[in-house]
View 1 (cartoon, rainbow, N blue to C red):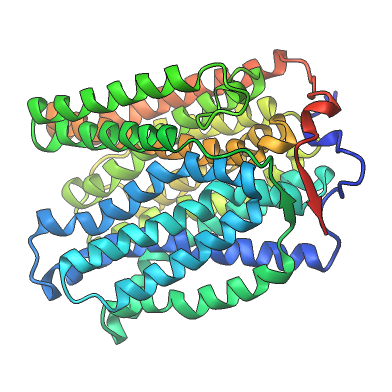
View 2 (view 1 turned 60 degrees about the horizontal axis):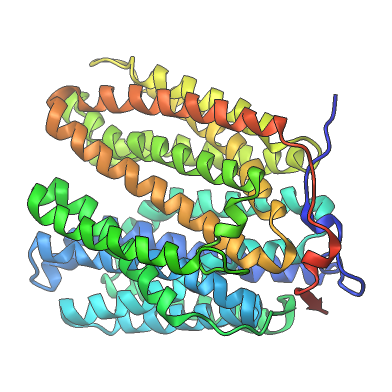
Length: 477
C-alpha cells in the first residue's frame, strides 16, 4: 500500500512558484550539474595526479598530501556557514559566488609554480567548492516542483557518481597529453560557461536578512578542522599529537553547541535535527557513507597486494560501483516521489549490506567477474538508498531552511567518509593482511544497522510544518 511522502514544500507560501518552468528548469539544472561536476571531479583527479605534481614541484610525499587535504578541509569547514549564509542572503548569491571563487581558484592552481602557491590556491578553490556543495540541494529544491523533487535529486546523484567514476580516467587522459596544470586550467572555461548560464537560469530566492554569526562560523571551522585532522593524526602520527587536536576540536564543538542551542535559525541546524525524519535521515547518511568508505579505502589494497592486480586493473574493478550508483539513483529518485524514503532506503541498504558481505568472501585467484558483479551489487544498493534519503532530508526541512538542510546533507556525507577512512586505517594497523576482510564485514554490519534505522522512519507520521513556518523564504522568477 502506498504511503504519503512527507514534504514540507507541499505548503508553499502564496505567490511562491512551485519550481521553475520549462525550459528554464533545464538550464538551471545544467549550471548546477556543471558546478557539481567540476567540484567532485577535482577531488578525484588530484588524488591520481598527486605523484606527478609532487615530482614536478620537487615536494615530498608527506608535504604534497596537503594538495588534497587543503581542498577537502576548506570544503568541510565552510559547508554549514555558507549554507546558513544562503538562508540569510539567498541561495543564488552564495552559489554564484562559490562558482566564481572556484573558477578563480582553478586558475590560481594552473598558474602555481611552488607547493605553497598550489596549496593556497587549493584552499581558495575549496572555499568555492564549499559554496557550490552547501547550496546545491536547496537550489534543486527550488528548481523542481515538489512532485518531481526525487527525480531532480536522483539526477543530481547521477552526475556526482559519473564525476567520481570518470575522475581517474580524465586525470590519466589529460596527463598523457599535457602537463598537470591543465588538470585545473580546464575548469576555467567550464566555470565561465556555468556562471553565464546561472545569471539567467538559477531561481532567485529571498533570504531571511539575518546577519551571519561570525563567531559561530569560526567555532565551526575550528571544531570540524581539528576533529578531522586529529582523527587522521591518531593514525599517522600516533596517539599523543592526535589527541591534542581532537581535544581542541571537541572544546570548540562544545562551545559551538552551547552558543547555538535554542536559537531560531542556528548555524549548526540543531532545530532541524529535532525533526524526527530529518534526524534519522542524517544518522542513516553518516553511517552508510562510513560503510561505503570502509570498502572504498580497503579494497584497492586488497586487489593489488593480495589478488595481484595492477593499478589500472584495480581502477577498472572499482568502476562498476559508481556506475551502478549512477544507474539506480535516478530510478530510486523517481520512486521516492511516490513511496516513503524509509522503505526505499531500507531496501537499498539491505542490498548494499549483502554486497559488502559477498565481497568479504572473495579469495585469492577469484576471477574478475566475481569481483565485478559484487561491486555492482554494492553500487546498486547504495544508489537505491541515496536518492530517497537525500529527498527525505531536504523535503522535511522548512522551505526557508533549505540551505541549512543541504549543508547538513553534505556535512553528513563528509563525516561518514572521514569516519570510514580513519576506521580503515585502524583496521590495517590492528589486523594486518586480514584488514580488508575485517573492514568489509564491519561495513556490512554497519550497513545492515543503517537499514534498520531507515525502516524506523516508517513509524514517523507525515506532519509537514505549518505554512507560517515557511514564510521566510520566497522565490522570484
